[in-house]
Image 1 (cartoon, one colour):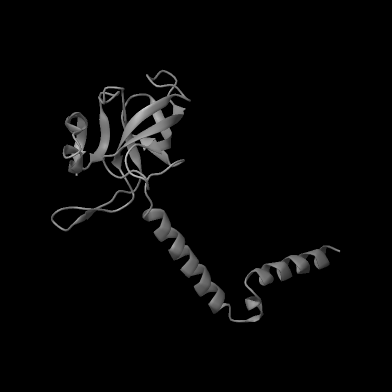
Image 2: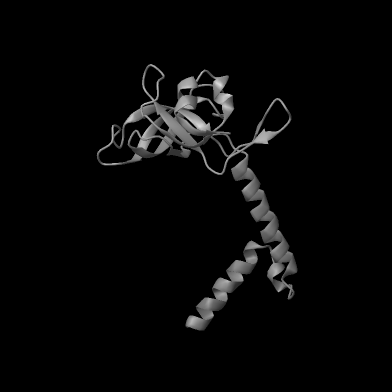
Length: 167
């Protein structure tokens, strides 16, 4: 009984690839898998920060992770230096910000490439944000990690002064 069930599962797995499971070498399946993985990795790197994107908080306001609710500028989403509305998903117990609170933030690191005037491109390994108050000032007193100098054009000079490293 168990052998018959296992053979049915393997048959179903072959039918997903459209009958390609009959090829004994398996090289075609491997190339399809690698092509699909390349496609997925390219899609993840090139997306905007949009609704339901989870971002890391890189200041000492008390929040660890936030989820984007809305990008305040642009229809597609937010890029470096744009302001977003977010909900706090994880927070330190004694921080200024509590879990579930709705906050404003500035995107200071994004995995999406951004071209510079000199022809170079800047992109980071993660998506990160610095939390702001209603007046647009940072809620924390320190900013961790590198921050791009494009924030100067977006009028976020206070974040640049608090940053450890300007990229």
